[in-house]
Image 1 (cartoon, rainbow, N blue to C red):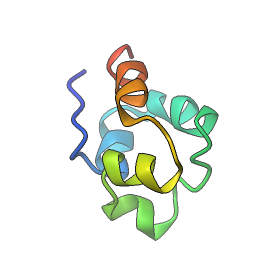
Image 2: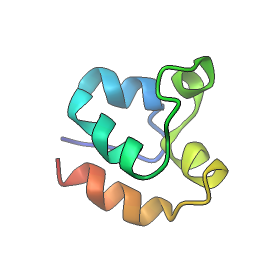
Image 3: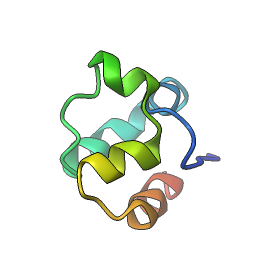
Image 4: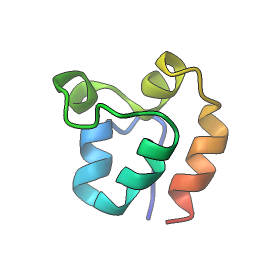
Amino acid sequence: MEVSKDMTIGELLQKAPEAAPVLLGAGMHCLGCPASQGESIAEAAMVHGLDVDALMEQLQAL
């Protein structure tokens, strides 16, 4: 699956629901909240203090 840092969490979960456990495991527990629908993967990683490149590797491996 093609994933980009600019993709919103909402888009990611629509295209790849199997990404939810990866996000939850990284500490992103509010996957259904309104902010997650408009927040990019990069923005969410920054807010949660995560290494976006490491997160992207996990997501692209799905």
